[in-house]
Image (cartoon, rainbow, N blue to C red):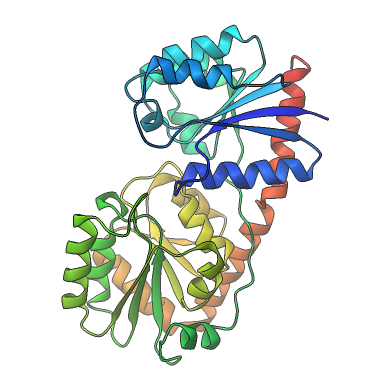
Length: 338
């Protein structure tokens, strides 16, 4: 049985933690033994922390680090990766963001393979390009209850078309664009689920909520953080899932909507445009473009149904089991010296 040490945040509200948990379970289902080595999502980042993490790595075949620059502040890439190199085990690194030339070069020198989720990330990784392998972010396909049932459960009139968003809420997520666009979408309402990594609200979320309730009087509902067991109900209430993020290298939140089979519209950032080519979603360029496409999707059953089918096909093709199979093959290749 192959043994993998997975270095990542665990047990917190964090996209990388969610990703790692899903991947680890799928690998376990393929008869891999995964040892979670926790790198904290919050708190002090020090050389002592690096030593503590290195000391907790058990005897394994492969070490896999889930890397995001913010988790290594203040610039601990050299300390961590030098320590990992000294352990003498094959190292795989998943880059959840790319483009930091100093960090990428350090990681590219030490890592045996660098996993990225799409072609845009592969092009923008600043380390050794020969080590880069594209493995898509996984999906967990879910069949939602009927829309009428979901809307009634949330206290929504089943006849009202719903545009929805679920995910972390910060200025980078572009919700101002979505709210402004919805002002010109008649007879439809906006459903917003999500929050921050800790707590219920931030000052930014409170200000955004106040503006949205004024701009969309009687047409906006905020749900707060949505626990896993309610996700199918919330997504099932949506006629259209909107994801207006201003910047992204990949997005688990976007893929969550796709995995629930929603007709999806997302901002035209390069990684999302790649998915548009596969039929998984449609992108928008501006507030006006978003507004026009929302009106068209709400009123056009054929186009909306086509996007729902495209989302389901994408999620099935990139299920966590399929993604785990690709990771297992990669580990085997690294272990064989390939």
